[in-house]
Image (tube, rainbow, N blue to C red; front, side, top):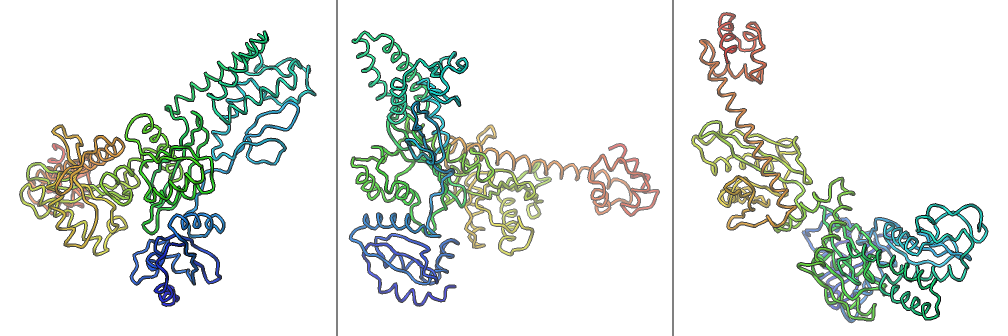
Length: 607
């Protein structure tokens, strides 16, 4: 506990209720956290109250607070701007920092008589630079496309020094290079082509085509048909390149598309940036989840856009940020035009949003050794069931029996979307004499949950799951819910409902059903879990039934009771191993004389 809490509480009790920014400092008076507040007193008080319910990160921050400063402003919007500015300036330890997946990338137009266009990771060499871009892939793709469309050289030759030295390479013959090495293209003509290529990179295909069409018409009027033909071919190449882009951009002209994938303690946010109808840049950021109930999307957008002027007129999102009005005001004042935050429900923009989400999921998967489908499945399942986080550790239960015989239950565990077989458990129903699925499920869950309450058992049996799924409908959920309340456990509990063909149909609560068959990834995951727990419980039931059958056949031998039959089954496990045992070995295992063992041996051979 922080010994400075009494002082901090006393100081906070006198704090103003105006909007502003608070600046937390450690004992060395270094800034460790900066936040904004609509009401400074209420916000700062939440950190230092008694019996707080802080997340580990916030608790760690509070334990290191020695003192704090604050700056009062006139509005929440001013607080937002000041917070962004101070965070960028001081980079406090406990603030959510945008950790991009790569460094910055640039497009360089070299400073020479015959300039080259290349992708670079820094700006150390002389020349003109475009950027920075956050995506190395997009940068290289833009450079490659511009060089190919405008037939610019990509070889190592130096011009004009290497004019006429050797024959033109293959690129010239397949018409991806204009053949500058032949020495027949002037510096002025070449530089004009480079300017067109740069214009294409900056402004996309539409404006480039318009300019080149104007130049082509002028050349034709001057009867310069050679130049007009060259421009015609170049326009055709640009149009082909733009057609390829349309496969990706879904008709979006200029927009930012923001989507996220949550994976337990982290959130991964992708931003796809389209400008002039083409993918201009892409960035993926890793953030820690919100520590204090604040909207992580609002925090991300303010930090991402603060100080930027190249902001499109539309930002496409999965959901609107909590500070929608503040963020819209920030974007419009920085860009100088109206900006709309839009959540599409269907159509091409929704497809593009899905593409951004897949980018986020794949990056989260890479960071956590999972697949993108697994990340999305857990996130979708958690959201569908109204959970605060994706369920990391899921337990599922199923009852299996043959009428009122061999009544058993199986428990399977899925961790991070995959089966954790070492945590599976099998239960024999002990308290039910007749078939009773509800009673059996109550018995099994009470026995299992008591291990959580008592803390007795192995590491898996004492662990509290993030989600419990029962193979059954709302009746099963209603049968178990009172036990959860009795034991003081608050674990999300749902049933897995099957159709008449024994296929997963829906998720059941205590009073209704949640249809998930339209949520593909979540539906597939629940189906896998339901199939696995059913397989596991049925397998155990058959094993149990077979052992009971063997036992009844063994007890038919005079001198062999249930206890001695059980000893034999424990010693040999399977019927095949039992058949391989000699009379002497059977006598030793069951504790009987050799005559009884010979009779037993004869019966086993005929089983």
